[in-house]
Length: 465
Image 1: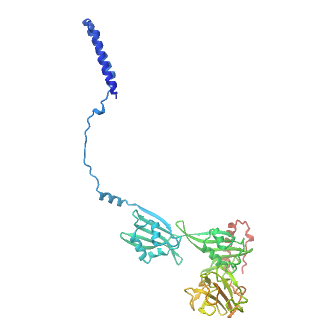
Image 2: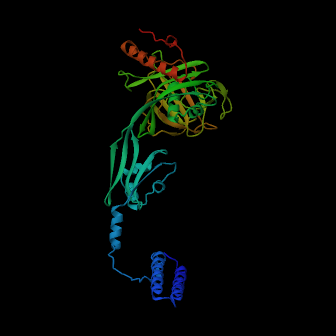
Image 3: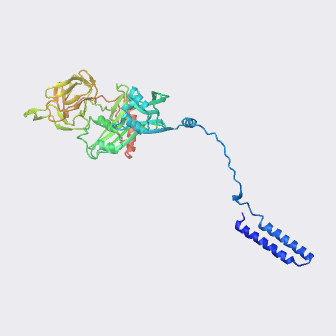
């Protein structure tokens, strides 16, 4: 656009040009005036063409007209309906924590739904959510307003694992148990004793349940409270179960090797059709590890009084101590040291709360000073080795919490720590040959685990019969 101030100057120049042209032709001949006038006109036309043609109209001079029109907009209800139709679903995942309530769990999952909470509390199957163990994963699917759509978790009941699913259907809820797609893995770890077994298993990322199985597996040979030495080491192979890449639980130990004070103890699980329990643990030599009696009725303890003459703490005189006292805190579980039948469960003077188990026609065991009995500890009840029969206390003649344990042969007390007990018959024949294959495989795996390159010839051999 040509500038406005320059256009004003241009107009003044044109006027001056005309005056000069007129002055030149005044007083001249007619021919001269015609030529001069023509030249002035051409000059004006040329100048005008060059200087005036590009000038654009000033925007301020353009007329403006306002146009209005009524537009049809969707109603508010229509907008809400569209948003509801496009409502998003949100997924959240968290783990059950110690001391959790249903309200605290749902709050962390972003669930704001009183109807869902009421259903879970009132429905017998859905209430399993309230009994989840700490660490159990729970998943929730909610609408963007916190209304629960689906709640899912994994439960284990009697060794069977399934998915518990709570689903919303309109204004109602339903609960179902679906088959869980479980992956079984075999994990192998090694550990070294620095202070205690559980400290070593923690350092090796071994679950506590597996550590407890190690105690049960070698408990007939090693007292894990008093026999462990710094530098003792172990290898263990055990089952783990996973779902969608998440750890669910540890299973059975498949094989273990424990070196205590330089002496190796080895065990492998072997499925034995002739075994009523479906299988058992055997040493690498084919001998069953399940002895008639455990070495100790408590998992971890110390001996506070042995089988000998002593000054009785209550009577204040020398008296024969007919058992072994295991010092432990009140409430510590007490395990039956062998299979048998409860012959007595009640109160006896001096013994306090006591359980007596008869194992066969010759052997019986006594467990005294209990704080309370296990629910199944009733006269005539069958018990298996390792079953919890009661809990440590200080009832009867006791000055502190401990377990008084007696071992009787033909009703005569014997020293539990030195008495010779019967053993289970070893494998033989075809079962022994099948067992040898299992041992060869686990020996190879343990050698790899510990970085050993020991030749197969150095592995323990099992003599065939």
